[in-house]
Length: 336
Ligand code: SF4
Ligand code: SF4
Image (tube, rainbow, N blue to C red; front, side, top):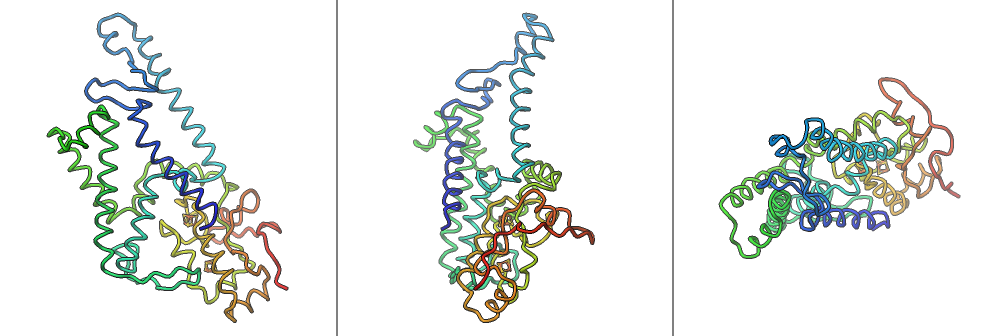
C-alpha cells in the first residue's frame, strides 16, 4: 500500500473515532430532552426561557444566537470553503466516514459477486493490469451482509448518542436494555442505513450529500484548484490497458475525463496509484513498452495531481474548448 494511502487510512480511522467520541466527552451534542446544546462540556442556552420571562431583551437573545451559533459556524464554513477551493474535496476522501463505508462494501461486494454494486451489468476482470487479483466467491455474501448490518448499526447508535445522554445510550447497549423510543429509532435508522449502504451508496456520494455538493460547487469555482490531471501527451500508453484507474475509483468516476464530469472527485488518489502500478508492473507488454518508448514517461503514471496553470487543461477544457497545459506539468522519467 502506498504511504499516502496508509496515511489516508489513519486519517479516516482517526476522524471516525473522533466522531464517535465527541458526544461521549460532551464536546458537542444536542440534548433532545432539555433542548439545549452542549459544547466543550458546557450547556449552552440561547436565553429563550429568560426572554419569555422578560429577564433579557430580544436584542440580547439575538446576540446570544450570533455569538454562540452563527459566528462559530460561519468561521468553520469559511475555513472549510478555503481548503476546498484550493485543494478540492479533501474532507470526502481523507476524513469522511461515508466514503470509508463505500470502499469497504465495494471491496466485499466485489469479492462476493465480481461487481461493486448489484446494479452493474459487467463483471470486473479477476486479474487487472495494476496487480489486483480477486476471484469472486459466493461465501463472501454472508460477511458482506454482516458488515453492512454492523456499519449501519454503529452509525445509528452514534447518531442517537448525539441526541441523548451518550452514557445512558452506551450503558443501555451494554445491558441490552434500550427504551422503546431508542429501540424504534435504532430499528428505523439501521434499516435506512442498510438500504443506503447496499443499494445507493455511490449515488449518495455523487448526488445526495449536501456537504459534498457544497464542496463540489466551491471547488468548481476555482479552475486552478488541485485536480487529478491526465497527461494527454502520453495518452497512447493507455492503449491495451484494462482501465484499472476507472475500476479503482471508489465512486465510479472516469479520472481521465474533464473536471466537470468529475465534480464529486474526493482526491483519494486511488486512480493515480492504479495507473502507477499499471505503468510499473506491466511495462513488459510489448504494445505498452513500444508506446512508452515513443512517448517517454517510462513507469510514470499518466494521472497525477496538478494545480495552478496546469489544472486549466482539465477544468477549462469543455464544449470544444482546449487549453494545452504548460510544459513540465507532469513529472516524466524518459525511457532510455
Ligand atoms: S490512465 Fe493509466 S490506468 Fe487509466 S487507462 Fe490509461 S494507462 Fe490505464
Ligand atoms: S477520480 Fe481518482 S481521486 Fe477522484 S475519487 Fe476517483 S479515484 Fe479518487
